[in-house]
Image 1: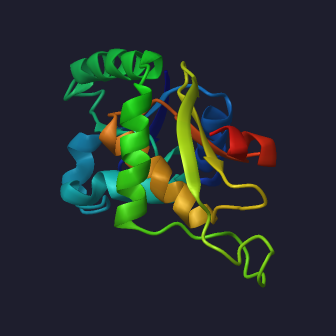
Image 2 (image 1 turned 180 degrees about the vertical axis):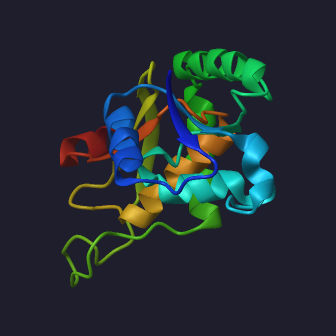
Length: 193
């Protein structure tokens, strides 16, 4: 599990963003650690209630990572980092039952209808709403999931992010660097189901 340490009293830099992207690409779990939290009263930091949203928005490559506020100088919250790291490592090993994944797909489709990618015309990708056939976990450490859609169908990126957020929320995968991939069924696979 990688810890990206940023300073509470300094703006996010391009180097911070580049490091966040490297952590995400490495398949490591992650935590955004906001140091110098004892200086937060200076007014140069976002309000405490918005701190996670602020750092996740400014470090989009690690939007999946929890945010921990600490002060190395005073020791504030530093003991919590090890506990959070161990919890994330457990999350990365988690195997989610197939039935629970299918329930999540059904819930997601009821909550928000899936959209195809593109604006195509009849018979082209994006023209019809894709059918979500099944969601399966394909790996652990880090968790990887594959969503199967119908042949010649696609899934809009916003819907993929929506499903990814649901996976993280429903199965407590924050910090695990879980990834969702979308694949098309072949016509023969479709008949077999």
